[in-house]
Structure formats: C-alpha cells, structure tokens
Image 1 (spheres, rainbow, N blue to C red):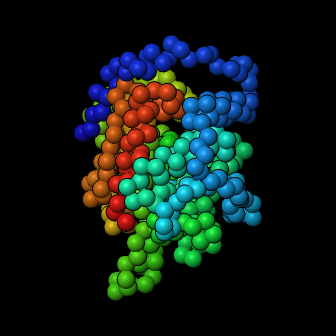
Image 2: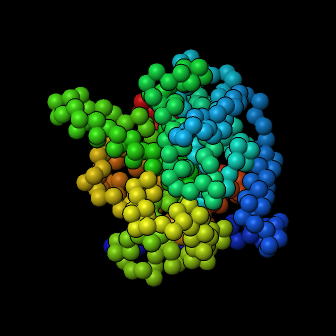
Image 3: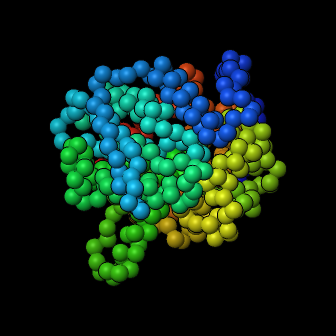
Length: 365
C-alpha cells in the first residue's frame, strides 16, 4: 500500500519565509466569487508581468476557437520571431484555477517566457510554439464545458490538414499538452479522449488494420486532480489518516475546503455517474482499459503539502504499471500552486524541469 506522507512532514523553509511577506487578501470578506475571480486574475497578471517581463523575441497572435454549440473561446499563440527551419512543435497549455480562475492576461507573461526561454536553449534550433486556449469558467459554465472546449482546441490544431497549424507554421504531428491543477486535469482528459477515439477506430477497422498512434505526443502535468474527491481510492493507501486529503486538509493556498468549493462549482449536485465520468476521474479507470501504445510519455510535478498530492502520485504509478514512460518530481514541503510565486527558488527549479521535459519529449519525435 502506498504512503506518501513523508513529503509533507514540515513546510519547506523557503515557503515559510515567503508566507511572512505575503499581503492579506485584497478583496473584502463580502466579495462575490466573481469579484474574487477578477481580483485574482488581475493580481496574477500584474505580478507575473513584473517578474517575467515582456520578451521581445516572441510573436503573439490572438484569435478565437469554435466550440460545440456554435460559440467560441479566445486563445493566444506564442511563437518565436526567429524560428529555425521547419514547422514548430506545439505545446498546448491549459491554465490552472479550479476551472474558475485564469484569463488571457493572467497567463500571458509565463506563456511568452516559456516560448522565449525554450527557443533560446533548444539544441535543435527550432524552438516551440505555446497555445493558451481560455475555456469558459465556472460557475457560469459547468462540466463538461471545459473538457469539451479543451478537446476542441486540441482538435483544431492536431487534426490532419489543420488550416491553423499550416497558417502559423506549426507541426500538427508534434503536439504536447500540459497545465497546472485544473489545467493538468483537462490535459489528461484530452489524452484519454484521444485514446478512446483510437480504440474505437481499431474496433471498427478490425485487428488487421494499421494501428494508429496518438496525436498527443507528451504530457507535462503539475499538481493534477485525477479523481472526484468523493471517489478517492483510499484503499490504495496505507491508511486514510496519512492521506494527503487528511494530512494537508488545512494546507496553504489550497486547503480541502477550497478544493470542495472548486469541485462543487465544476460539477454541482453531481450524480455518481458524473463523479465517475472519465473526463474527470481518470484514476479509477481500470488499468486494462489503458493502452500503453496509445498513451504518451508523461511527466508529473507534485507538491508534498498539496491535498491533491496522492491522486497525482497514484496516477503516475498507474501509468508506470501499464508501461508508460513517466518522470516524477516531488517538491517536499511546498503547497499546491507554489509555482504561482515565480520569485521562489523552487519555482525556478520547476521552470527548469519543464524545459528539460520538453526537450526530452521532443527528442522522441
């Protein structure tokens, strides 16, 4: 039985020092969820813009992505101005925030930084493009709006003959996905849906047909939610008391009460069927339903003080069992979302690890 409690024995000293400097919340206790969302998005955009700056070697294109129902969502594409020869690999980054927070502006500084920094250090000299689609937030739009919109963004760029991929010089056969928290959940959901699409195609075409490969070439996941809290498989752990949901119930940034708030906005009054939907709860999909040949190499970044710690590590173990290449980085004593504070040395470690993982994934193509 698994026991990951050693990763949260004590808060990391760097985190303790940072906490002493953090200002109190800027919104009054009577603020609505919408006012809190607006304040968070504005604050994150400002602080990240001040830290990351505005790279002058990145081209930013803004457009809309058609989604089911005839509507659309905004998106931004970040490309190196001085790209090497050949089409650019694409990294689609779904943003964090409990399916509730996040905007074009809150994510822009890091997306531009990632595009610029990776391209400057890319040994192939090609670089990378970063796509950020902005799915509709909760509570105005509940599940399955967000996974369906995330899939629509992937389909638009990863489909054979993609007009947008051709227009922007992207390699539609070299698409990688990632995100933090809710964004990681959405990235996994796209990979599951892609696997199911191919499995269905194989059934229709028969065993003698050529076996397709997944269009998702890699996953980079930070603090991924992988199962509805009500369905967490405590039986896979040594004991319930040492689980991250119990051990980190009052953790900073994302205590369990806040997890529940986000989930209840995402899947309000959820039935048991909805809780188990494989667009949300991947951890409980039986191992035998996964095909290691249809699942991309996957990297995990997991925080020791995170209530979501165990479901991320258990999902990593699941992929290892079925033979998927995985890499796991654990940040002992740090809470969920510590990387939102880019001034931390641990956040610099996280950023560098992501660059290394992108190089690793791209080297496999």
